[in-house]
Image (cartoon, rainbow, N blue to C red; front, side, top):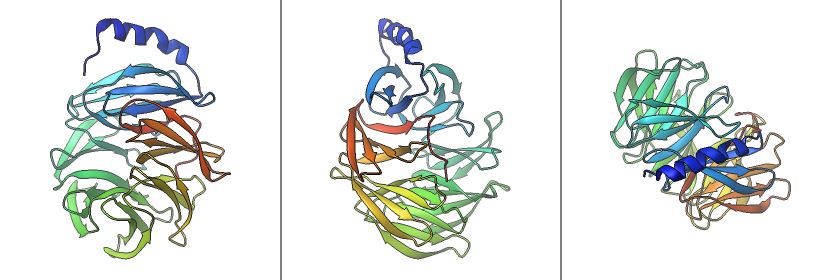
Length: 319
């Protein structure tokens, strides 16, 4: 979607006013824009154009940039999370859907959901190294701590795929529940947690033994993960209209809390002090803010259509 020239100029003119460490970036996938949200006033303060068919955003490992993946325009757009300004556009990244950096920062991985493959790049210069077949519909990813493997959920073949980063070759596939989406490695590097969007549980995989060891019932459409930052707990978004977010103890492999979050909760972000959880509501055109001390929804912030990724600098550790 191309915006008129005068709107682009207007957007550029207001961006300097948005420069603030208290700004959240929210990707509106259906509008092809990024919203800027004041995390103190809890309101949208502006928008900027992104690209054609953006699906996910993620920060670089040092939080110096927020990267928007643009599937149809085959590019990555980098935004400065401190002021919302566009930093650069990287062309020639074919059909990026979901993105990830390996823990050792040597690899940049892009899932090409539409093209049924996983592309491996060197993280330093985004140089393409290999394209790995990944049928069907590669979605989310997780890495082991040693950066030896990347694990990919295949939504339409109901499998998890392991890729050896050293050889850039598929290693194995494991059948899982219907429509696997998010995937998360436990802090002890022992288990993979897989959100089973076509059911109501998180599947626990012993990836070294290559077998499922448990199902953690959360709620319908278990979708995505965000570590709480305490090295023990992880949030799971359950993406339905009624919606909820579950808190899973990764040591006991059980649900310890649950919050009602309507509107299709998807991606999440958590404040550094651990007091608030932000979640994009894909169906409600809102960002939902959960008060974790009160254990309930505290605020709803209108943004664009189909909000997906969310990021702010003042976030908890990613573990």
